Length: 213
Image (cartoon, rainbow, N blue to C red; front, side):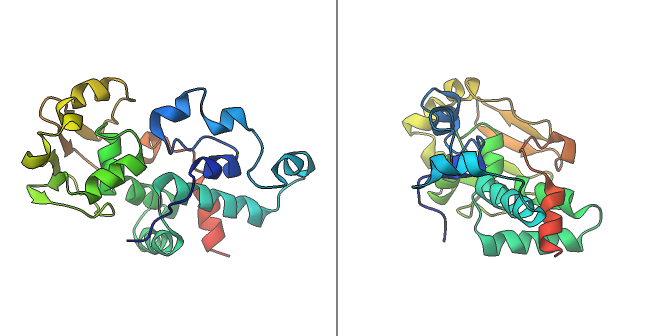
């Protein structure tokens, strides 16, 4: 399964803001965006002083890239999500974000079972989670209302999952569209999220404009 394997802190610096790709590290003084406010690369320091007004295309491209990087998706798959969102009823941009939020790796992250989406993706790929009792190793699996996400019985013996309750206390609260039981490490999809509940710093209209060129 293709995925980005390079240094993720460079992605945040390229976008000029925190994308929270490393979980708690992004909130600490070790965060690269805090220490180096300029873009990565040999001429990064010079670029921050030379920037003029970006073109409409550049703004649209950067917003699309930012969304891809937040959710850890490569271009081909992201374009497929856009086509699905476009074919549905309602606003294409909102449909796109709801699709991204319903990915299993994002749901595991939102349920506070992982420190970041990258961490959640790894846990899912290693087969630690089941959906409705069925082992699931595809981070891109799209959950539906009523689905129950649980840690598989064999994984519960691992130290990480035995200490899960203490980890969950240190993480941001789960959104209202999921119901989480930290004692049993179980989460239920109560309903699909609404646009106002998605806190990812994305201007989805710019993404729609980019693909509508």
